[in-house]
Length: 397
Image 1: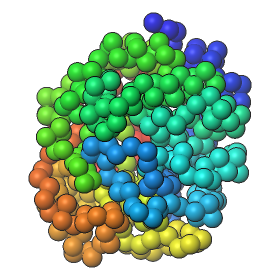
Image 2 (image 1 turned 120 degrees about the vertical axis):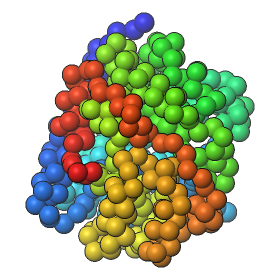
Image 3 (image 1 turned 180 degrees about the vertical axis):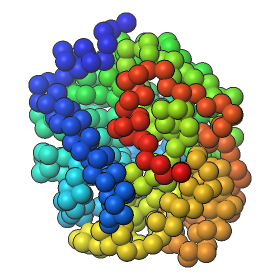
Image 4 (image 1 turned 135 degrees about the vertical axis):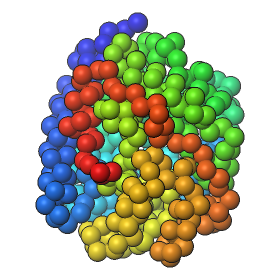
């Protein structure tokens, strides 16, 4: 097995990538402090981080995906994206998750990165379009970390993604990113089908041997036109996933990321805490990517972004509702109550399908709030990070 992640970063990532990563870590600390101060002082609200789905175009059509591709593709314009980044900077927020569809299909993607050298971007991609020239351009910029979605090994990737050779192509993109000296991650949405493949030390050893620096584990949330709810995790699997993450954090030579639990192992929701919200390709300002309802859409110039966060009460009410409903994922745990809330608030459907009907058809599924099985972090580094750096805002107090 290769050396520890921080050694691989120091020896494998370019100097510029390392400097931008350190700046991100420093700015992230400032972002969290500024966010906490605003919350404590009851100052105008603005999330610490924003997730931007910049296009609904994609070269794949995956089972359980919430992104609806349209005949006329929808995407955030460069003007909108730049206005979002500029507005966020006024609140000391400089980190953005860049999602799609497949964000590499957005014509202005590299302009977004190059025009904003003081921002840091996490590029969520299926990896099939990554190659050496693209990765070299990203490394020259330094302020982008690609996180490549791998949903299983060869057979499972084909089933989940709907195309042959997806695993091989994604792996090729991953290898190009590592070779270029990028700070490189992989993401995995864990369901019943891929659980045994991906929640396994052998898989961690494999991606470490490929030079990967971090892995982000998600819990599968059935969504979209082909949700496949039968693949949702059982309670026993959710507990096993949490235990695996906690155990591997003290032994595996890779950074392991999650956004589900605090340092004590209690369930959290970044949307309910207000730490992160989502903007869809059609300009909908949403609670999170999978809850496709909104109170308002961005204007062409996105000049109304602050007004949406601070004057439109939809998100504020949804944060309160979600916190009262429980500590887990309100979409998974309480779809009936969520539907009633959306109808009461006359929320706008931002899905390009019929999100109201989908919500009506949903049945409760377990998310990550398993109260009788709360597993605290073992790693002192992760405990400190989660307590002071990312979570711990008293949102559920």
